[in-house]
Image (cartoon, rainbow, N blue to C red; front, side, top):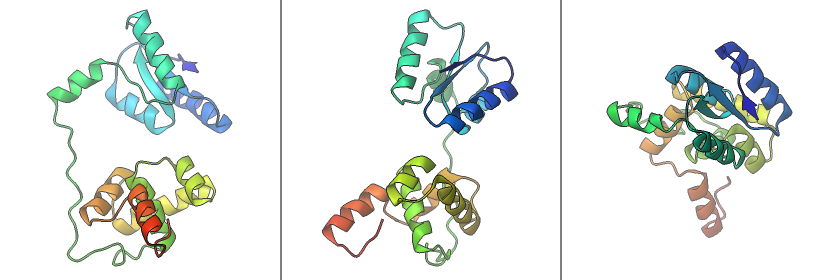
Length: 181
């Protein structure tokens, strides 16, 4: 679905409406590119973000990609990212802190493995056979226990400690049934 409303508040409201229906993907159409607004929209369920002044065939291609489930954004974003250094340093590991030392439950470890694989809450819920609300509770607990600000930092924390992601754990599980994920 194409969302063409002027303010960020209206865009977020429209996205919430789409998210509540769980079956529609929204592409935000804007007059002028705004990185912070784009990131906010993507964090709130937007499938993509496009500027109105792009060529018609480019816009159609972006809509088609969004409909197929791809995250899309203006082509100029790649040039902007190339000019800036947006790399995020991984969180500093605390001395001797492992997932056990962070006091994560087995289920929180499972969710953390899924976060490392880049799964959405909905995807994690399906993989682990729990509700999306349960996943959100686990994610909040993980962020609090690891003392990190977001999912990306949690995944980086786990990667820095050599924890396997969901796909790697699934491969281990096939080889050795002692791991549950």
